[in-house]
Image (cartoon, rainbow, N blue to C red; front, top):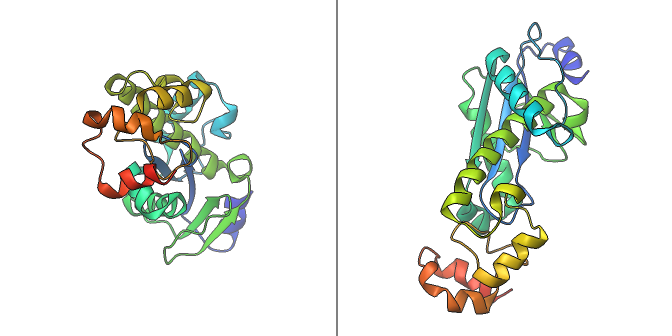
Length: 219
């Protein structure tokens, strides 16, 4: 619907944008941008949260094969703690747009985010349920970020990351109390830091800057 409307107004390369990981306690925020090929739209594209793992993987491969252009970008937890999650999300979206091999002339953004880039754009509440290109971006972002977090679960065992994808489940929060945060946890997020765990596991936290340690002390 939205893509057709924008193309009717003269825009030919409409990119959908979405993010994954904004509310997670661990790891980066991820954004994807997708310019769909109107002649080659995979069947079954929908909000990534409504799809099974197997369906997301299948559609992710099909989107990569058929899209006119796509890109995925990350902003890490260190930057999130420094500039806040909203600004980090915007930055990830800018990076994704800039990485597109085909430059878009219009952006469709999920939610109420305005991307700080000089380009016509429209923010759509629940856009991943109302726009095919935003839904496609949500699928690419989730599959890519999930794969990264599963790999990081091997590096940082004990937090159940491969199941919670960095979000604040009961097991994850219990592990934070017991083990303290890893260098990839977002110390600016409430509930991440347990000062006692930070002190007892100080040798495991050498990668923290003084600013990030202070985030914990102030929680």
